[in-house]
Image 1 (cartoon, rainbow, N blue to C red):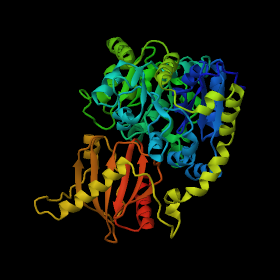
Image 2: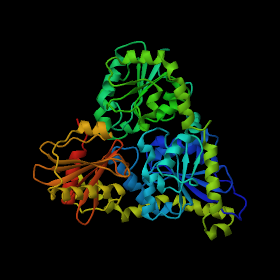
Image 3: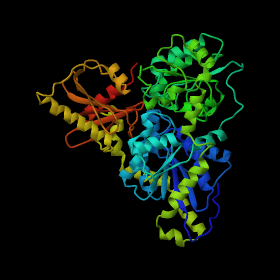
Image 4: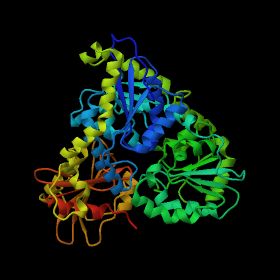
Length: 578
């Protein structure tokens, strides 16, 4: 799309990057704001993603929103493409993309992000831009109040509920945020087909929307839920998990046979991650919401309807603000009579409607939010336009061509950067290489915490006053902390199990011994990291760390072993249970 001339030349345009470095669903949280900002004088807006499909989807969204003068950049390289093929993911590993793009991203005046991992750009030397956090979902889980939010320069918030909690947890300052509403409503309304229906009959539609995290119900009850609806003929069922549940090869292989069994069933529609799973198609057309901890329940309650929640982990939730949405309908601790529970939820909806309306009102400002969000960004950046004297002196056309050359050269810069950084990510592929060189990964807060826990355990082992506990109960840990520990490989022994406090929540630390007598620590927290499902390495002078993510938890294996050996052990621990 051509970019129109921007008068006047005396005040240079601010160049704003909307960076989408994760799954496609996050794009809908920012694209409508990008459109509104691009229509304002004085702004050059870029939509950037390493995923070609994301860029194509963004173009379609901008067109459906009425068009805007936006630059679209697909930041791809052969290295990123290889990473996607290897992981089976729809996007490359976040940290890899960020490292390749960091130098180019430092040209912008501001970078708007719907996720927190990319704030690590500041630690990569990207200091020129202001970092703006776009609200990504509006649920109640602690993951939505990530400590990394405090590192953003400006934070956009959907409503008073999030604002109060972010202030209480000191993640935002009074002058560093704005309550703007929910821009996803604007984008989703433009993208979905209101007339599409998955069923040929008019039976009530139940939406089963399990979350991908360890707090969700899919792992324990997913099969039973589908079987219950397959065995009756009064309701239709849409199975539409959070898109991250099936977004990589391992999870698709694991759950594919179950889902294949019910493909084509006349009363069951299964969505494995299509655009309808992110554009509110299902939350708009369903008659009943069946779920656990996904923030999509609030999107469903845009129009109050019956809700039913699955407490698969036996959580004591009644006074826990992380489960506030479970006050919007009945909560089940078993699914033995699921269809009867659906009947009761429909019949008793009147008892919950007032709570649903009040909860929705505290979560969102009225209407959408894209125009308010763009206005807030404009007002935040206006007093502090960053200096670049060349832009102020160049004619508008020359300024535009200069930035077009920058964006057009992004792919070439990515290629050059790839020559400099592959060693940084050698650990990502190390588990199938015999004798690789060790690599340096991010010195993140989580890695430092994992090492500190490992070192504390070594100190405890040397102190008679600090007895070890050999009792390890993963079910108890799950109930108490909502952390689902990975399966310990056969033959490994637990020497100690400890719970440590931290500013980001509980830390679980297991002292383990392999069958070969190697001592390692397994550390777990509910926190996001730059890692994915495949372990990557971070080296320190005394210890090596291999870390990965599963659901909404991060895990690290720490030990004084060779890099290749530690990463192989971590790959065994991280392997999904079969």
